[in-house]
Length: 307
Ligand code: PMV
Image (cartoon, rainbow, N blue to C red):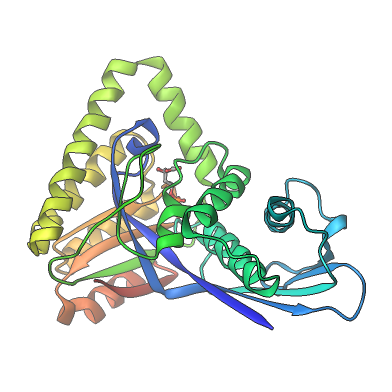
């Protein structure tokens, strides 16, 4: 049997503006992951079991735009192999449609488990580019940030269309991630931002420039170990995301309550409208901040250290 895993991810700065060519920073979240087992089958066909989404199906019965089926087919066609009988088991602790990269993580883990089971090595670059093809099924026109961070499992400074740039964290820092519990498809918020932009490009280009500036400053601060400076930058980035109309009452409530509970800064993370927010805290304050976020309505919290 072959087994592979891939972590979740969170965007620290730069979501949405990244679709318009500005940089973004994202980091892996090792506390949650997708796990895939591939075993030889005793019946014909490639059987995919994903009990989390109640899926038990033979590959040929899945529609062409089904992300799990598409990922397996893409792998087989990339190597020109007709697959032997296989039983594929997929599980994930990453909440779906909440900005934690669950789709990308499942794809990357699946590609790697198939690569090892069928002994067709895949480089990180190839894994990343195949996973990007599948991301398009999830998100329409994704920037590629999710598959990149999940594939490399390192902090990434991401600019669409440019070579992958990982970066070093000068001193570790702690984030509390809190889930609004509202599932919000990224495709929709990305589409709404596009409509705003199309109606008044100069106005929104300025907002994207301001986000890009925050991202560059944040990267420099992280590299120097001056992570406390990220708090104010998170607050500014959140305000710009509010202007882009991708926040929501639930997200704003969690962001406010994190600040009241002593967080150094807080913002929504990912596509917005729902999904997750992040709060920067002193390590010792993380449990208190997580409690405050639960009290303010968070359905789940994750404390993670960015290293
Ligand atoms: O919701 P997430 O974490 O998958 O992130 C979406 C990030 C966006 O910038 C809004 C879209 C993208 O493709 O980069």
